Image 1 (cartoon, rainbow, N blue to C red):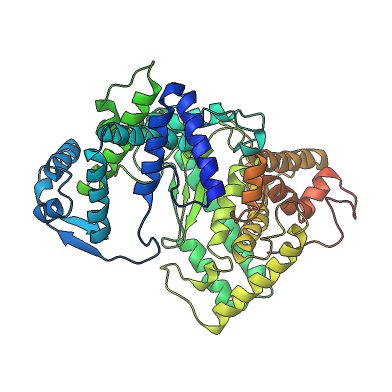
Image 2: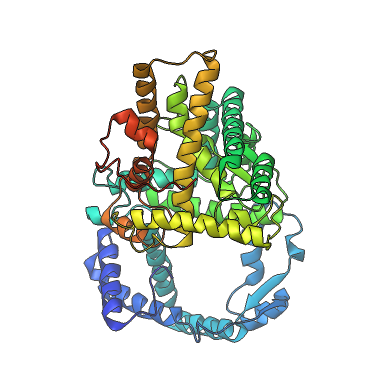
Length: 502
């Protein structure tokens, strides 16, 4: 159930209070309070598990066996009703898996007992409706007024708007993706991202021999792993989202402008059917997987490949006619960051084929990376919402990737700037202005606003530090930044002691 059924008394009282508030705010008359109370009590009873912590083996059963375990339900009707919508013609032959056989039998008996009571069927319908409404309240549009601190974003982004947009994306993912890709990206963009990736790789491989702390074997390993690293740039097939949209179940249902709850019912049902369809059919492209329009990039360790999604190709992360400084300051830093994960604390312990490296040199290389990260941990530990995780390996990986990635992207931009100007150097004023644009673009790409609840969660759960401190932390360690903005030695943004991670 969406309502938790195993809470302590104080929390259960609060849950019951929320239950009534939800019912009355969605139009249930006060005169129905006795029916609501009866439904809540029975929901709590039905929701309790005999031994929730006990491990239960899964077992295969036939439909006849399932019918004998739980005769209160017409399983033939249920399975036909659900599986017919998947378009999978052989569903009668699919295996049926259950777990907790005795608890299932007991639960069905409890439902039968309720059904034999006066208005028992009405009580079960009330439970189903209230559970459905609670699910909407938790995951979509909350009928209550949210405090700013509960908001995912800052007070400048109303919770209603944020959740409404999020739900629209969840309901029609492939439609929105199709329109986004067609309006924002093309083969020229794809080529540009691949070229940026290759140029940054070249910068990194050229800089590896200059790392004095590494022996030749580790230098060669890093260069080879970087050279073999691949990229998924924006999309594999521009028509994939159209094909996924054609397969989506949601378009088979009536979506009405004036009936939010009916729409939500159909949207949830469609998502469930699509999940079944993806498991039963070998669709290519699959109905599952990451959305291409996500504003996201990541390094896939098991593939030695970085993924750059087209959601990144929009301001302030990318400008169509932007300069080298703006493109490498923002998108270039993101790409560099992901490349650096391939040779991070954990990255150097795996080769390009994901084989574990256990040699002394591999362990030494990882240890040296970790030592470099300790300087960053001490520095970042003073930043808000960071102290609890500054010395965690996953956070150290992110801090290293930020600092090393910024340096790699900067040197790539400077090298290409010189190359495209036929090796004619800029005068000092032009050079500083261009560098300032590079760092400004980096900072703007990392803007973020969060409510207090998310800030508190971020302090522990997320490996990244807050966007503000990702920028400050990396810039503080950049001599190029200090020079571009004329920061005096010893000032907050140009301390005497810097963490030189790379």
